[in-house]
Length: 65
Image (cartoon, rainbow, N blue to C red; front, side, top):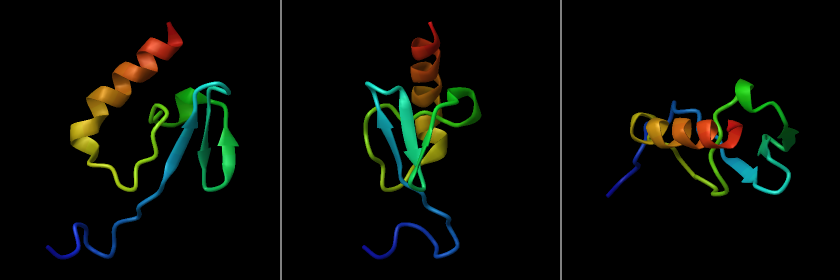
């Protein structure tokens, strides 16, 4: 099947902790949801941004309400 992404993609893993309402980005816990995209409580090895953006956006809205 080969490599899904070209080598120049900068892939980052984001981890969300539902209890803390924070997520881990490059070994730092981020509290400001508005500054970053929130990826629920799953770990993604890669993101197909266009397909997931709507889901992520709705999750952010539900957490703010």
